[in-house]
Length: 306
Image (cartoon, rainbow, N blue to C red; front, side):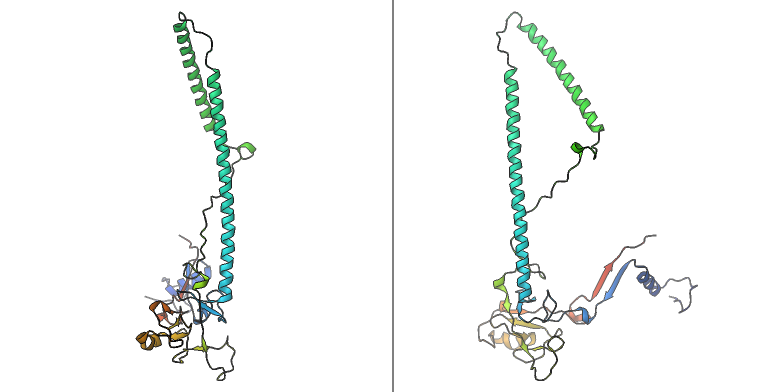
């Protein structure tokens, strides 16, 4: 494929590089950018505040949170659920009152129909010699009345079809009814996994910090902050690690496979472990493609079709 030179503007080929350059300059089309290491959070950072945790807790799914941040989130969700429940109960009461009013109006209509039928009953004695003629006349008058009613209803229907509601007439102004609310669920869901989360299921995590006498760098700016509680290896995004539920200590998965799974005993407290007690921590990933984290961000923008 031929390519344009640096200053060549008369070529007939529209190259891929030129197409991407023009797309970025015009502001149309889908833009894809590869994320760097700075756009990925560290393994010991909170999933809500994205800052290093000072009082970390872990969910059973392996997501790390700052205790204050996750408790504020759960409290906020519970207040929102209470507001939605109040609105739902209010809507339920209005629906009940509307149904009562409708039932009362239907009962009134039935009573009025019954009264009209009772008043139309003839109370005078009928003459047997003129009953046939009177019945025939009544039948003819009834047929004529029904025909007149049908013609009038047809005319009314045609006129109602032709007339359109006018927004400037108050009686014909269309009204927007409030949306029907569904009953909200009372469970609080994890913002990362979307599964139900409870306060008693949160596990307190105890990181083992690196010896502060070796380096005087602040905790936030320090790259190597914590180490494994058993092997003393430095923890990071490139090192898979897990939390032991009984002690809350953080160890590497290599230590789990080579040491802890043989006896299934917590090396810190000596408690018996099960598979559910070993919870891998979700990592933020690294700048490499093999970290298991999607490193491409796409922004879909409008496209001009020719």
